Image 1 (cartoon, rainbow, N blue to C red):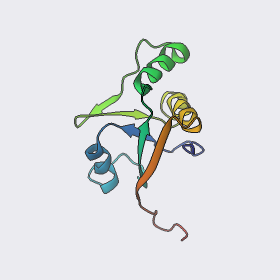
Image 2 (cartoon, one colour):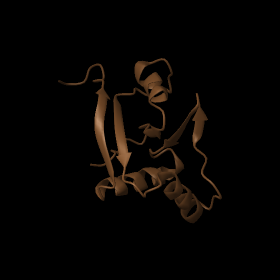
Image 3 (spheres, rainbow, N blue to C red):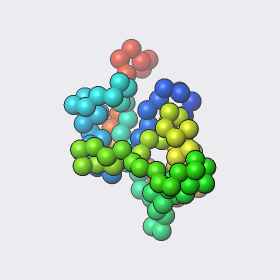
Length: 116
């Protein structure tokens, strides 16, 4: 139950809006990466993920504030290795391992040429 961060070119992000996420999945918006999964997640009550990200920014990156990407009325946070050294993804994975975040696969598209 972790996000696979092995591929250094992987793009992994979370957002607060289904419509924004679906634009990338459906191909309406493009970012140069093949979007293959949509995963819905829920955080246990009492855990503020944005506050945790801000604390990582202060303690490990020396930033006063980590800004999410704001686009199309949605906030998104990069979790992959190319975004803030992957530190936010590491925190997200830690919360998954501690079962403080639950998830479910909402949509999947098999890449062309992938083995069945």
